[in-house]
Amino acid sequence: MTEKTKIIIIGRDETTRVILKDYVNEIEDAGVSAEFVECGHALEYAKQNECLIVIDISDDEQKSVEFISEINLQKKDAQIIAISNKTSTENIIKIMRAGAKEFITKPVTKTQFINTVTELSNYEKSNSGDNSCKIISTFSNKGGIGKTSIAVNLAVEIAEMTKEKTALIDLNLQLGDVSTFLDLTPAFDVCYVVNNLANIDKTNITNALTRYKNTSLYIAADPINIENSKEITVEQIKSLILELKKTFSYIIIDVGTNIDAKTITVLDMSDLILLTAIVNLPAIRNIQRCMNLFKKLNYPPEKIKLVLNRYMENEEIKTSDIEDVVHRKVFWKIPNNYLTMMSAINKGVPVNVVNPEANISVNFREFASKVIDYLITQNITANKQNGYML
Ligand SMILES: Nc1ncnc2c1ncn2[C@@H]1O[C@H](COP(=O)(O)OP(=O)(O)OP(=O)(O)O)[C@@H](O)[C@H]1O
Ligand SMILES: [Mg+2]
Image (cartoon, rainbow, N blue to C red; front, side):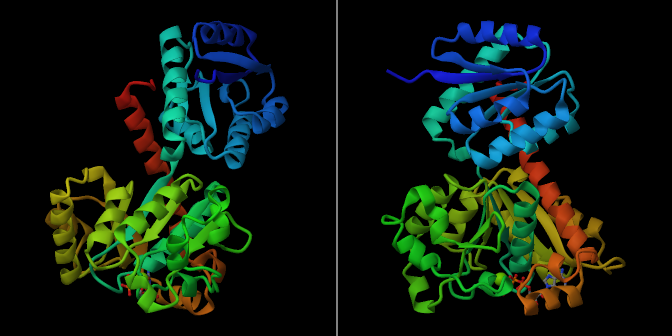
């Protein structure tokens, strides 16, 4: 016998609560386990109980968004349906960004509500919730373009911005330098973690990674011994990522430059590939080659985003020239700021610690925000296509 889905209903408007309870009564495998007028009063109950939360945010949006963020911070797989009479895309993004899994516009119809609850609870049962994790890879088949700088600074900003568990994996198995960029002396490296995956306490996999200061960012560092790195198999990398997906909301991977089976496995598993180039002809030719490869691999266009690093205004080659050649829009440009970047690397800190006001620090904050919003928008689109979000 499958367990009934317990539902909490939260909202100031009594009529809406009554309607929602009525709808829940019609779902065979679900029941209302608690009802709250104020989200503040629901917090402890929601944290301590396995339940699907339905929250009407129309009357107190600010507090409701804080509540959703707080629950999501505590429980990665929190199943939250937000209901509102405000339906602008901006509003939906804000709510989804806080951690709601679904958004329903008021007035809520019975079919729509029942479908959403059923889909969400079935999804949770069959997926153990690990699909909400997003994997972002920084990639270029050319060395020295800035992949590690981007992976590190983006990961720091995403963790800071979302406060959600974020993993940064260095897959440059022979020449990695994420730990140097963040001045870490990891207790375990990627080799140790993959070789001991079977023995690691899966409920606390964060212990096998290195926490970056007091943040929600955890690092799987590059192998200490080059010889060990050769022993890591494609299957091991795949298992590591699948395991991390259960705990982390975001996984950022600094992928190696070689196009081999390990790289392709990681790119296959990624939700977003940040294909990185600098503005010169050889780099642009390489981008074309990568695009051709991705086409052969049948990657959907929305999975690949073009990032120009070390960008300078008044470049001889214009952004539009690149876009014409590659047939893709540039997703993001990171300014050239050698002094700040070098100082950050030499000190082993992200650029925002060297100077939070530097153009490159501001740029990375905005970049992280754009990446998060993009992934959320993609989720909304996918859910709409699946037909369970209006
Ligand atoms: N936006 C930037 N402005 C100025 N310098 C930069 C910028 N991004 C990266 N660099 C510099 O470029 C160099 C290479 O960067 P990084 O190590 O991140 O590249 P990579 O693609 O990871 O290289 P590899 O292929 O060796 O792993 C570093 O010295 C870094 O300081
Ligand atoms: Mg690198």
